[in-house]
Image 1 (cartoon, rainbow, N blue to C red):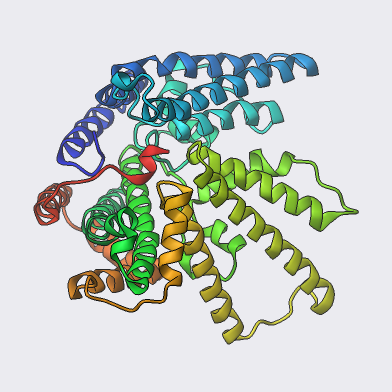
Image 2 (image 1 turned 45 degrees about the vertical axis):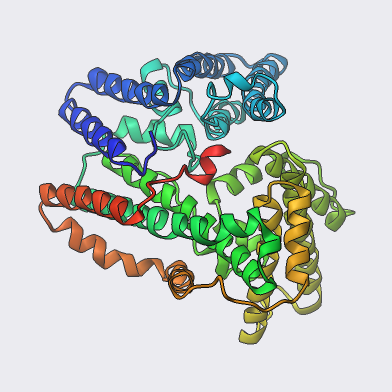
Length: 464
């Protein structure tokens, strides 16, 4: 059940009505949320109904870690949680590789949903308890309500389980402002996905990456830039819908994007792109890697490289993702070394000229797009074919139609709009009657799906 289709919104409306109707009966409200989570998973495959078993292990491990002061026992318990989740993650990643190679091909339908986001979220619970940053819950229903929370289980963002548990316990009421913001976010997410991301994918990106030899250098470069925008609008569109769905159920999910292509270096890019993922890598992987003060630049560069290469493999077990991660890890090391040198040479608050920021932004954007080539390509050979095509310096533009250029320009403008510009529309929406908001959203869903023509393609990050 894709979150960009009409059946999902019928399902979401039903869940919201049942959830708020049982507000005064806490146990029943939790049962509604758990049942909603299980129903959502079962729509992908009945196999995922076994996921609560894995979640229950982490629930019990969290209690066991809190109940003992023995360091060895605590480490063994945490190790068990890490092994459990990484084994689940490895199984999900290896299965598509095996089916693509011809093994168990008849079972390729069995695991259509990646559980990467679930595994990362689940690890935040046991690791935070081990570190003493979180008190474990003793309520299995509460834990299951948020551990497999349906808006985020397919493609994030990656919330901290402890924060969701606190929000669940607070029993926040749904205000008009929150409902209006939620519906506006869902509407924006649908526009991003169906009218921009899918259009760019179907009319430019897929064609260029499938058969790059049929296109000129200018057209291939447009396809690479188009993919950068497609990926942003696809992923941020899902995030907007997920955050909106969370708000309708009283949850504040973490922000995931802050105009990432306006970054002036790769380090800033990762503070703006897939924020919940980059913060997870920082807090649970990068920070625990060994670093030395004596060889600070070298050790930090090594830690960046290892972190991003593992982050690349999280997306899939292929050389493409490994190279993509290595490119970002190397760039982060360069940025760190440059920053350290600049601080020593000019001081921490040295001014930066506007043209220096502009040049840095252009270089950063093009480097990120260069790395995206390996991320999107079907193989290393396909990526090199794309890069060779750009290097040919041919200039034909016959495949770049006016509607396509218009969508590319519109996408670039929408990406760059300040977040405050959406505050006023959110206020307008919140002041309209709730039933009218619902009808407007239903009409928007039907209108966009009609305009989209081919229907909604799966979200890109749903595969990771």
